[in-house]
Length: 181
Image: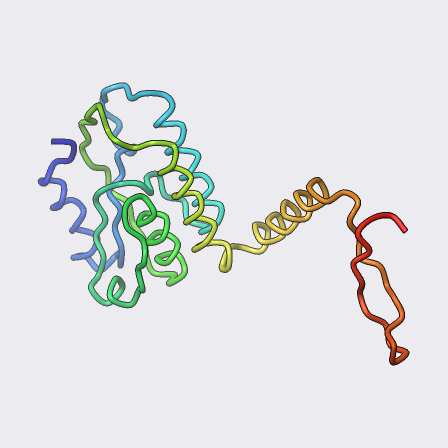
């Protein structure tokens, strides 16, 4: 078994003490020894986590954790649409948007091998991070998004430009000229 059900007692405590509205179990907070994981899945997980933290302004250590506890009114107030690996980025983004109190607790984890996770799941998770987090991202991230999109457009369409042309009623209108004039 990958996760230890006894960890629910630890996860429940911040909710019972009224210190948290949401509690994430973290596989990475344990200071004790652990089984060494494969590099690429770990690297992808940490990359997705880093991007999620940038966009949500949270500082969690494990977004893709199985254990998440919510106060009933918090989770019932969130319209969830994703399943599979899109769920974690979506719920993390929407929890961040509520500005509720989020805690993390260390949990036990004994990873199994032979998981059926592939690169498509990572792409979907990245899409969900951007889709659900970008509209409410901190201002520096929104500016970065616009710079990146502008840079991509400049590379993809280097000869396209918008020029100003005279409109038939005497006004001006932006006109796509399709290249150099």
